Image 1 (cartoon, rainbow, N blue to C red):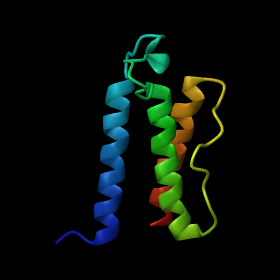
Image 2 (image 1 turned 120 degrees about the horizontal axis):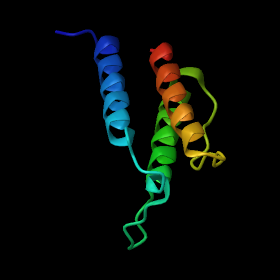
Image 3 (image 1 turned 90 degrees about the horizontal axis):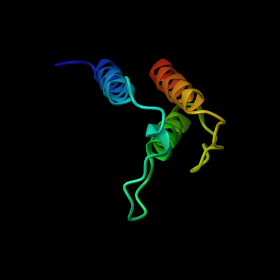
Length: 93
């Protein structure tokens, strides 16, 4: 049986891998792509995923994480913040 922290780190690595796979070679218009019907854009989905991870991290370090983090000026910065959050959650385990 895999120890719980190792399993959670594996899940976090899988999330990072799948996110990068979805983002690799994406066209410039991708972050703001809208499929209509009030669906989230890719940048909104990424920001939401960062928020979920931030909420999970708050269980380890206390405090709160905003439900809607402040939008960053570029998609590249959003991607960076997402990966930094993944690393930080992993470090807290």
